[in-house]
Amino acid sequence: MSRTIPRAYVSAAWNENPVVARDEAVKYCTALVKEGYLPLCPVLAFDGIFTADVEDAHKRRREMSEDLLRRSRFLVICGEARNEEVEDDIAIARKAKVIVTTLKGVISYE
Figure (cartoon, rainbow, N blue to C red):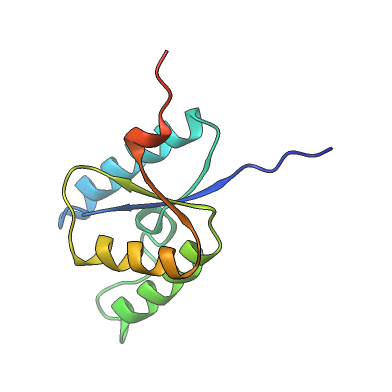
């Protein structure tokens, strides 16, 4: 029997600096991979795709992110801070019956 890797959508109150946000995303995703999850992170997935000169780039990025979230089994909230985007992700996850947890809730301690 084949085993599928559980998909985990990564959400956080991302830093305004894209370099810092990308570094945080890599750290969170690495931790999830070590726990056996397939991280789906919009910060990494859409890096460089939506530039400021693209019309309604924020809306298109948000729609694509929402699609990734709906296809996930878990929504993993990373970091201590929450913002409106994180709260929106939680609301979408609950409607789509996606399990909401935190990174601390996923990491196993030995």
